[in-house]
Length: 126
Image (tube, rainbow, N blue to C red):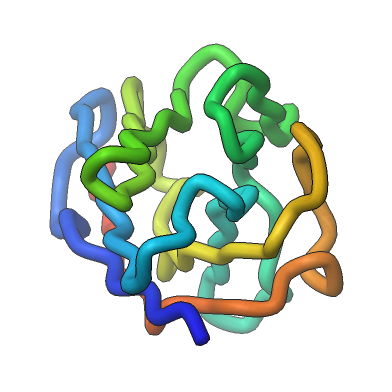
């Protein structure tokens, strides 16, 4: 079982930056591919970014490409989402997700992931 705990959300202004963290329990973090998703009020949960278990490859939704960066520190069992040039439309609950990966793959579908955190709220004011 993997437990994921997100942190770092908050209220910021448009154009600001924010870094989210997701800490994972257990000693098998390096076998997990990780992802970030978000869910705005009244909308479906959507993919934001993912990273392979080694951290060597990343994948982004078009809406955040060039502004957000996903990274991980396997020694700290933590994955990060660095968010720059935030926009009001980035306002959402951001959730961390994990899936055991047999190779160096990244995943972008909700159904790919087995483990989810509770989420952290990000609000961007205009």
